[in-house]
Image (tube, rainbow, N blue to C red; front, side, top):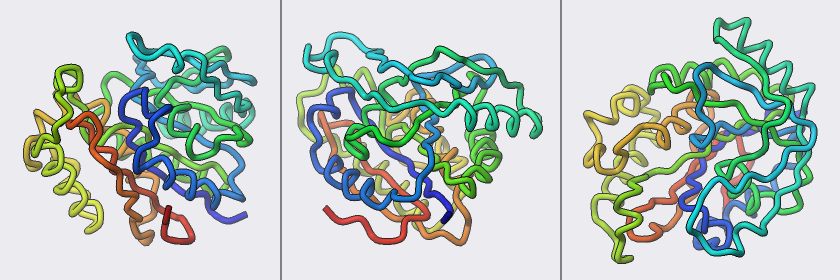
Length: 265
């Protein structure tokens, strides 16, 4: 089995499930390349815990962990099976590496997991499980978490850091729909750093990136990018999956490592 890929996907607002925009078809094209993936491990900001928890649920429910959105969103289901054995092995791997970890046998899939996967693998054929983000996670420890999880790729486990390239909820709710220049400038700074493999720059994004405080008032939607960077090999070139800017302030730019071909859609 070939080594499974790594993704950072901007899942944006929950309405991305209904409004694929520019990114959705590209995720569908990427999904068509995932013929050897045995399971998908998702790290999402919508599951934060004191210590790391690993979802060992056999048949996870679809969690609609949002409010005030169109009714059609709440009818969507993503009935992917879980991966209890792989999830248990993941918990053991994390524990051996010094992380405080427990398991959750009834946890479902939050929208940070199922919304992008709805586009990437709409038939829900690949088992999915999640690893939570500790509240104490920062850029350095997120990178280390990705490095700890990286060996799972050799077992056919795809690692998906699901976050958002920009994530200012206040401005999202107040948005007029006009593109805010800061969102594109922040995304462009990250693009240059990611493509140049400048990890030290990304670790210090909050002080180095333009408009960082405005793009991410809090870190949790940025940290899955560092998890993905930790899980990738330094020899793997980043593949840019360009997304549009939705609601004027949410950059949907995404990245992949370890894919065999450039993504086109």
